Image (cartoon, rainbow, N blue to C red):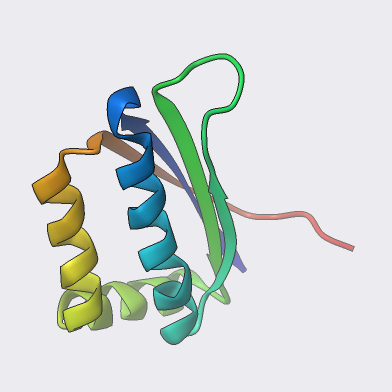
Length: 101
C-alpha cells in the first residue's frame, strides 16, 4: 500500500472555497479505487496550511488513477474550481508507506 500525503498552502481568505474543493475530491479518489483518509483544514496555528491523505494498493495503482483522472470530467471540474477561485497557492506531494495493524 502507498499513501499520498498532500500539503496545501492555501489562501486563508478562501478557506470556504478550499473546503468546497476538498469535498469535490473525496468521492473522486474512491471512484478510481483509492481510499481517502480525509482533508485536514486549519483550526489552530497556521491558517494557510491544509493536508490530505489517500491510499492505493500500490504505486502502479496510483499511477493508473492519475491517468484516469486526467480524462475524467468531474476531476477536471474540481481542478477548474480551484483555479478559478484561487484557493490553492501551492501543493506538495509525498508518498509514504503506512504501518497498520
